[in-house]
Amino acid sequence: MEAPEPLTWTTSARGRHVSAPFVISQPYLNFLIGGGDYEYKTCLNVVVKGEIVRTETGRGTERPHPASFDLTDRLGQEAHLEIVSEAGHSGVHVSDIVPSSTPAVDTTRPPLYREALRPQLHFTARQWAMRRLNPVEREEGWLNDLNGLVFHEGEYHLFAQRWNKCWIHAVSNDLVHWTELQPAFFEESLDTGVQSGSCVVDVGNTSGLGEPGGEPAMVAFWARNDNRSQCVSYSLDRGRTWTHYAGNPIIHLPERDPMVFRDHRRSQWVMVLYGDDRYQLLRSDDLLHWELLDSSIADSFECPDFFELLVAGTDESRWVLVRGDGRYSVGSFDGQAFVEETPQLQVDGGPHFYATQSWAADPAPRRVQVAWMRGGRYPNMPFNQQVSIPCDRSLHRTADGLRLYRTPVPELASLERDRNAWPARVLSTGSPWQIGTAWPLLRITCEVTLPADGELAFDICGTRVSVTSGSIAVLDGEQPTITALTKLDILVDMTSVEVFANDGEASLTACVQPGHHELTLTASGADCTIERLEVAELDSIWP
Image (cartoon, rainbow, N blue to C red; front, side, top):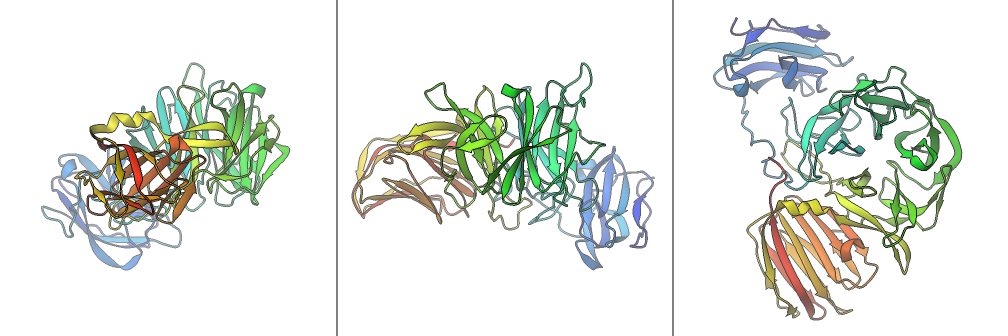
C-alpha cells in the first residue's frame, strides 16, 4: 500500500486513532484540519519507527483549514498516521488526507539554526515535529526558566522549561556547543504541569533508584501546577530516558521550584523550596523522604540557586543564595540555616536576566551560571527566548564587602575566527571613531581611562552601550562598578548584547533587535582614552 486511503476523523472520535502502515512515496501530505491547539493532544501525527516526525494541531479554529507536511526527508520510509483527540473539552477534526507532489500551503523554511534571527552564540530551543512561527508558552520552540543544571561524566546537562509542559534538555562537553535532545519528560497528563526545579546525580544511590553496577540515578525535582505537589523523575541512562517516580508526590507542601543539592560536610541532601515570598529549607537522607528544618529565608522570590564558593585569594568559603529575580546575598550555612552577611545585591543590571541557575562545574569548585533572557522578541521565527552566555562565578572581598563577580567562560575562546587590534588613542569629544564591521558575532575587549565627567558610547549594530568611570548601561539597564572602570568585555550576537566590566565587577544582559553592521565609539563630556581595543569575530556554536 503506497498511501493511505482518504480518511475523515472528527471531534466525536476521542482518543488516539491509528491508520494502517504505508510507504511514503510522495514528498507532501496535504489535509484539512481544525479544532484544538494542544500540541500532541489535538493533532495529526506522522509516525516513523515509533517516533512522531511531523505533527499539526487544529490551531484553535473550528473551520477546517488546509495544511501540509513536507516529508521529503522521509521518502521510502514506512509510516503510519495518528489522529489524537485527548484534550477533554477540545477535539480535532481531520479530512481529505492526500499524498501529493506539491504542497497545499507553503512549507519552505530555512535550515535549522540558520534562521534570520536565531542567536548564534546563545542556546535556543528547536522544534521537533511541529512547524509554526512565533511559538508561545507550552509550544515547541519556546523556552523559559533554567532547570536542573548538572555536570556528569564529562557532559553538561542543560534543562529548561517549556512553560510547565516539559523539561527541554541539551548536552555539551564544553559549555559552548550544544546538542538538544528530545525533551527529558513531559507533564504526567494534560495541564497537571511539570514546573521548574533541579537535578542531582545520586552517586551513592541513597535513593535506591539506581541499579547495582549501572549508571547512578539522575534525579529531577519539580512541582505540579497545584503548587503543592513536589515530585520526582529519574533517569538511569545519563539523562536519555526518564521515568516519573511511582510514589509522586514525595512532598505536599507549598509551593514550587525545589532546588536540591548535596551537603557533603554533613552527608545530607538539602532542598530550598519557594513559597509565600520566602524559601523554606528541608533535609533528606535518601532524596525521597524529607523533613522541614526550622529555618526559612524571607524576602525571596522563585527559582532559588544556592551554592558554596571560595573567597578569591583565600582558603575561606561562603554560601551564595541567588533569587529568581537576580538578587543575591552572601553568608554562612551550617546545614540548618543560612545567615546573611551582605544586603541583597543585583547579579546583573540588564533588562533581560531572570531565573538563573548554575552548574557545579569541572574542575571543582568551579561554578558556572546561566539565565533566561526573559522578554526578547524574535518576530516570525520558529523559536522564542534564549539563554545567556555561561559565566564563571567568583566571590571577592572588596572595600564594600563580599561581592559576586561573573565573567564569560574561557571556553568561548574556541569560537574566535579572526581578531583585529588597535593601539592607544585619545578620543576627542564630537569626533566619533568609526571602525565598522561586516560580521554580526563579535567580542569587543578594551581598556580605557575615563575622566569623571566623561562618557564613552559604543554603537554596535544598532545598539548603544554607554560607560562612565563608575557605571555601564545598555537600553534601560544600568549597573555601577565597584572600582573605577578600566576594562570592558562586550559580546554581540544576532539579537543580544552582554557587557562585562572590570573582570566581572558589573554586567548587563540585554536582548536587542539587529541593526546594520556598525561599530562606532564616541566620547562626550570630556576626552576619553582608549588604551587598547581588540575586536574578535566569532563562529557559530551550531553545526
